[in-house]
Amino acid sequence: MSRHLVDLVPGAAVVTVLGGGLVGLCFNDSLLVSPDKTWWNGDWGVAYEDALDEEFVVREPSIDLFGLIEWTLFGEGRRGVVVGEGGWLFTAEEFELYPGAVDRADARARRVAEVQAEMATRGVSLLVAYLPSKARVETEHLGKHRVPAEVALVGPRFVQGLRAAGVDVLELEGALLEARAEGDVFLRTDTHWTPRGARASASALTAHVKESGADWVGGATVTLSEGAAGAHEGDLFRYIPLGPFQATLGPAADTLVTPVAAVESGGGLLGDATIPVALVGTSYSEDKRWGFVAGLQVELQADVLNAAKQGQGPFVAMDEYLKDEAWTASPPRLVIWEIPERYVGMAE
Image (cartoon, rainbow, N blue to C red; front, side, top):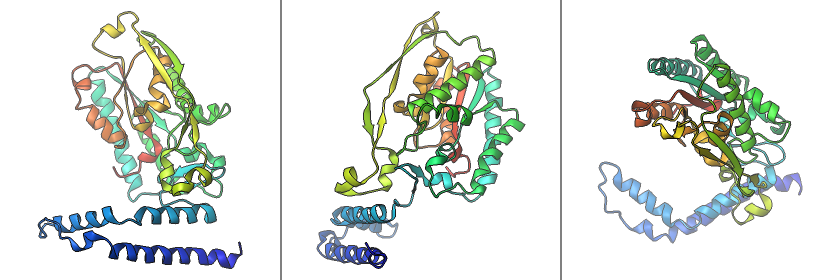
């Protein structure tokens, strides 16, 4: 395809979509129907917009068409994804410098120190599991893209703040980089880690806990099994909408094998009301498909309460945990707080 023709394609696509949208709008019955809502508080306008959107028949095809053009001609996705090499996708959040990110990182380091102090009054230890961004670990798959220097400084500043405040924090970058020698530690099409990356992190955290002399490690018998391998279309697929061409022209799906832990009583542990470890964090912990909780259970040979929350960020998850009966009525011996790097400077 000549360069001149390639230059004309985006403009032609815009004209086609706009023309089709105008025709679709003219034949949209919702255009002539007034919602039964009050206008003075904005309800009428919202209801009218929702009705038009619901009946707008060319909306999804238009999105798919733009997605097809961006992907096939330019190797790019919609806003929200960074396309690397070999079908590797990264969330744009890992490349974005948010306004006030440095101040937010400092404030959150202070908040973590406050949480540790609160837990110490009840005899509970806190261990921060600091998860590096996928873009920093899988650098060889970034292609032409690089994490801006200003963004790369926010995470280390947060960790320095934790250490200065005496917070027990383990950076998982080393464990993940070491595990990469055996295979991927992050999924190609997803923001999350693979079960290999999750297990390597669990192993590093367990070694750190054992060094502290925790006497409850090994209080249960935990065995691990694996389910059947299956195709996994990651959460970043939604930024590359190709419609009916998704399977043939889109990036290949990941292959995912989810580990499952079976916890058996040992020394009365499961007969007690208190589980020795609570895990607080994000979807890296909450989603069982990655096997992080299972990895912790088998490495620690102890039961783990999963108090992580999906879609809320690690700091909101901790605030909710501290209000929960799992904390107020029966605090554990150890709380592991999983904090991904990309959340440190982000507004929640």
